[in-house]
Length: 151
Image 1 (cartoon, helix red, strand yellow):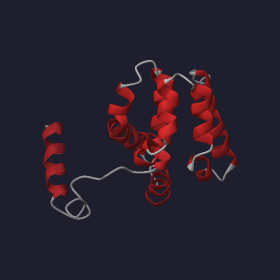
Image 2 (cartoon, helix red, strand yellow):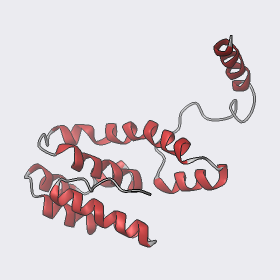
Image 3 (cartoon, one colour):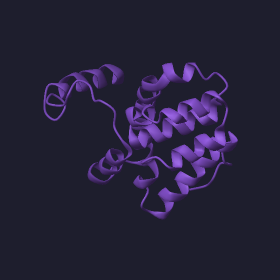
């Protein structure tokens, strides 16, 4: 009964704004959009992370073909690339051609430097964002994720 009632409520809600007027699909969201969503809509951390988890595969899919040629890249470096694509967009990441050459040739220190010389670091204006940028660069260099932190 509860499940059917929930389904009926969802079907009813879909017929009215804001649900009926929302686009059927949403392209890629960038990090600033999530900040705005959290601020304007008052989403909880869990709700915001749920949105991110749903969107991350879209980013990975955009540069997956390029990464398939770099089989040794590993999960940590894939996470770095996905995280950066989340900030500057996968197309901008794909345009850093020297990065992909360095990755293919396992020159991870150079790859990290290329990322730091791209437009990506200019997006971090707050100290926490700048620390995140440095951390991601180190993750690219060494292929190791930082220890879990308490936030």
